[in-house]
Length: 89
Image (cartoon, rainbow, N blue to C red; front, side, top):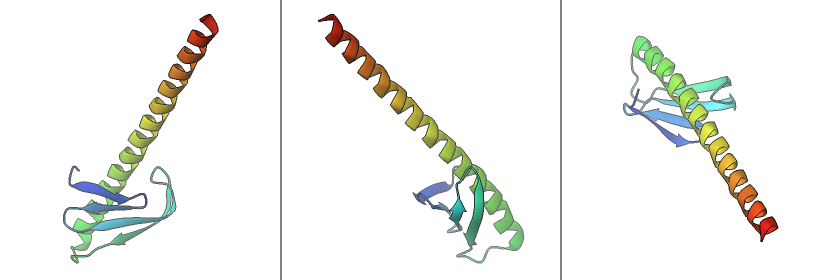
């Protein structure tokens, strides 16, 4: 599954050229997607790529949310530390 990349927030691409465009919902809960089969892969292979791509996108989305949450927590900790230091000084 490491053959996938995120092109932008709503588009991921496999190294083969197969793309999945998210048109509604989120990667964690897609409501509508458009597979773009640039190389006219067989239906079976395209289905395999679609499944892999959705797992990749969901995991990518989850990791992004975790990074954002960790970033907010660190910013909050720094803010508290600065506030505490200012109050003590």
